[in-house]
Length: 282
Image (cartoon, rainbow, N blue to C red):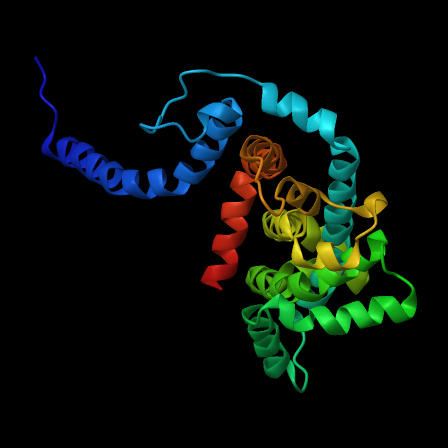
């Protein structure tokens, strides 16, 4: 009969302690979403029962059915997807080119602008709401996808540039030099060599921009009041009236809105962790 070595026993104890310490954090993180899911699966009459039910005694999909019957859910979903995808595409193009310049070139004001990019996301986005609204009104872009895409880019691109700069700076410059020796231009080396290598950083940046754009409410409520371009976060507010709140439909909508972000995170989890780690270390 073989016995476990002291090293293996200590390893198991360490894993147990780690899980024990992580369990409260996991419960605190997942608790609100699990409660949202539970609320979406019970009838309206069972949401505020006393004593409180932590597990639903009656499960129904009535809230989800009513959600699609009472509102143009697919239209709002499509609007949110178009805006989030457009913001992600524009943000990636600008942040990749800008971060490459910051990582590879030394020019006057480089440190100042990098600091400025880090400071900008610290301010509440509501501070730029009125200027952006006025710009969109003057240019005739109100109630268009472009107004939301440009507005979201104004506060997602600075942080995206900061993320990508750290990643590009961590890539060896010898890779580009070898490509240029083989006949590539600087742009060709950037597209053919650096971008494929930087997929983890690009994925992390894309996921960040998409999540921010998908969940944004304030600018969407101000710049896209027309139903043809209304996004999901704005559409869900109509379940909150002056005297009542339809918690069942609101919870069902919240669950569906959360699904694309959860699926994206599951698919891009490895790239997200690798990209954030590389940028943070640099």
